[in-house]
Image (cartoon, rainbow, N blue to C red):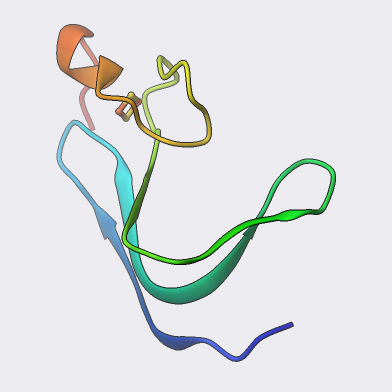
Length: 64
Ligand code: FES
């Protein structure tokens, strides 16, 4: 487990969760996907590239 350095989480209105700084993001098999942001994680459920946002929220009625 790495020490978090300057990791920030930002909920973008009607869009993805933005994570910046240093962190470890693991896939379902426990492999590290990435260690550094910025990255954008889908909150709407419509992305074809989960867990990442692919912009599909813009064409949906997702709000939040
Ligand atoms: S939040 Fe962007 S595709 Fe889901």
